Every structure is written in C-alpha cells, then in structure tokens.
Image 1: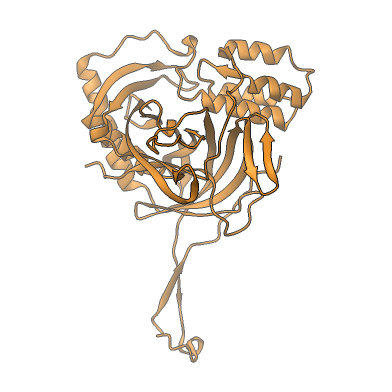
Image 2: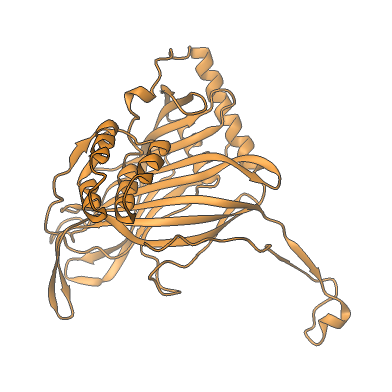
Amino acid sequence: MIRKGAFVLLVVGMAVPAFAATPPLENVTVVQLEQKLAIAQSVPDAELAQRLANMRLTERLSNPKLAHLKAGLPGTKSQEALEALADLSVFLDPPADEIPADPTPDAATLRQMMVAIVNYVNTTVRQLPNFIATRDTTAFEDRQAEDVQEATGVVSYSYLPLHVVGRSTATVTYRDRQEMVAAGAGKGKKAGSPVHGLVTAGEFGPILSTVVGDAVKGKITWGHWERTANANEAVFNYSVPKSQSRYVVQFCCIADNVSDNLNTHLYTERAGYHGEIAFNPKDGAILRIVAEAELMPGELVANAGMLVQYGQVEIGGRSFICPSKSVSVLMAHAEHPKMGMHMAIYDGVPKTFLNDVAFGDYHQYRGETRILTEDAVGDKGDSPDQQSATPPPINSSTSPSR
C-alpha cells in the first residue's frame, strides 16, 4: 500500500510592495534558442546573459541539450541565465521531434502499466536502504521595480530578471523511510540566520508515493511517448482535485493589515494539482514526476510547481533509482493588500522564486557502534554496555562561487 504523506512548497521572507510590470519576454523554441546562441559566440558574457534573461522557452529543454549549450557559453553569468531559462521550461512539453509517433497502448496495456507503477512505488519506498547524499541548491529570484521604505527614506530599485541569490550544500539522510536534512552553509548568510527563499522537501520517497497515491484517487490518462538517449519513456498525465490532494503551498509571512507589519501569519493553501509521470514501460520505474498546483486567480501565490528527476545510483554496491535533480518554482504577489481586501487576495506583479537542486555523492548509512570499557567510563557514570551510533564520515562539496 502506498505510504501517506504530503509535500510542501514554502517561501520564507517578508513581502514588499511592487510597482512595475515585468518587461515583455521573447518566446523562443528550442531550435530558435540554439540558433540564437550559435550566432552569439562573440557576444560578451554579461550581454549574452541579458539576452537570455529576456527570453522564455515555449518547449522543454532537455538535460543533454542544456549541457551541450552551456559548454559553449562564454562565462558563468550566461550559464546561470541559461540554467534558469531551462528550469522554467521543465513544465512544458518537449519539442515535437522528441515525441515519437508510436501508437497509443491499448486499454489492457495501460492497466498493466499503471499496476507496474504502483508496485514499483510500493517496492521502492520499502527497499531503499538507509543512505546519505548531498543536496546542492542554487536559488534564483527576480526583483520587480519597487520603492521600499528604509531607515534612510524611500529607496527605488530597478527590475532584475531571475538571478542567483544564494547557494547551499546540505547533507540529506534517509533513514528508516524518513528524510532528514542537516543544513549546510548558505553563501553570504550568517550561521543560524533565518532561512529565506524557496524551501522544498520530500524528494526521497514522500513525493513519489504522495503523487502516485493521489493520482490513483484522481484521474490518470495516457500522455505520450518520449524519445531519450537510451529508450522511449512512457508518460501518463494526471490530475488531483483539491479534495483528494496532499499538496500544500505555504508563504511566510503575511501582514495582518496594511498599516501593521508586526503582526504576521503563515499563508497555507492545500491545492489541487496536475502533472506528468514519466516511467520505464517495461518495469514501471519512475524517471520523472512533475506536479503543478492549481491555484485560484488573484491569490497571494499565483503559481507553484515541482519537478523531480530520477537516475541510477550505487549505494552499498547495489543499484537504485534515486533523485538526481529537482526544480521548484513559486510565484507570489509581492504587494500588500488594499484596505478592506481579504488578506489572501493580492494585486501586483508576482515575484518568482526558483530552486535548482542537484543530488549526488550517495553513500550507505552505517551506524558505528562504540562500546565503552570500564576504564573509559571514568566518573561520567556511563554503563560499560552503553553504545553510541554515529554516521560515518562523508564527502561533501560546496558549489563554486560565481
């Protein structure tokens, strides 16, 4: 039976007034993006980054093409801009040439595929060993043109497109089917300071079992085939009504009224959602999950979505399919509500928060046992048979400064 749980998208940080609309963006296909980059090889890094920031893909940019295009860029600014552009495209359909014209499976085959997915999720969640992994997060935000009241007076800020606002490396421990995260050092932030920006959790297990469990109660339909480097993937579309959903969107913090920012509360909304489940048609192994919240127009949070991609990793000499990458996006209106307006209803241009997360350095979790001898106990009152279990040392890496 699929385990119950919920996955949450949470943004932590005080909302601020915004007064200008986002500049218009140029819609481009993947082919058009490739053509534009091919003729811009002599363009300086910062200028090319600005050009990319003014584009919006109309199709999903695959990981192999993203890696190929990044390798040809002149510097880190344009690479970061391309990464953000690609991350925003993960909720779109792939280009037509990546969708093979294979026939739709018949009803019996579709039922077998669905059974294989459910069996895979139940088996995967139960059989995952205790392990440790690293989670490298790159956080992007945009900034609307705004006038902010500061101690020295009103300060006017100009518009900035999506840009890197922080990086962090954390250790994720998956033990007894529970995901625990030990926070790493965020670049430019003091130790012990409050977490700001988009916060996500549940990539190991919870989102897998939650989405499939909700989708079974909702509606699942055949989507399409997708061509990959190894073999064709199968894709199901699904939708989950709010009444059956365990998708929670949160935003911190909302002022209780316009004139007093001291009294705030956490915005929390359980939302219906829809998305895709990409899987191996032979064994039901899930390779990609996409979830997009269905939110009412005009609410504080305008849009929220999450993608998790899976790949083969080795843990303790055995092969498992575990998260390799996740992308989370949340758009929230930044302007305080007008007097008399319900505090969950906001006007203004939404601010975008985006997290690009890479998982790696998987190690099996092995508790170390240390038995204290009578001489070692001393005056501490410890019993000779007391044991202390600690995780083994692990290799950790920090994202390079840019």
